[in-house]
Image (tube, rainbow, N blue to C red; front, side):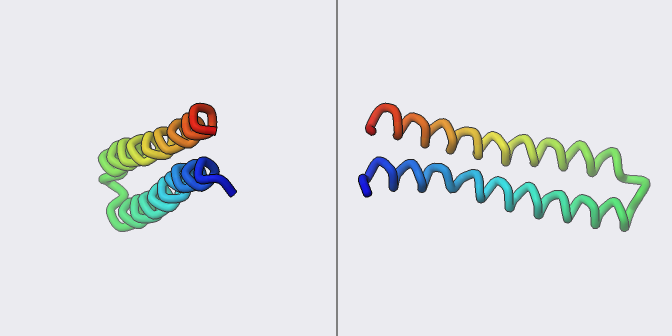
Length: 73
């Protein structure tokens, strides 16, 4: 196995972290809405912002993995 493949695999693991982060954030937001239904608008805004930031890190990791494969492979 080449170092390029190992580097690309490590960079692709950012998707795993983002998935876990989004899942945990969604669970906590659901919990918060269940406790305070009147605050659901504020909670959803913060949830969407957090999910967008977590997803951006996954996209960056994917782009880095593709760049490693194409340019170093």
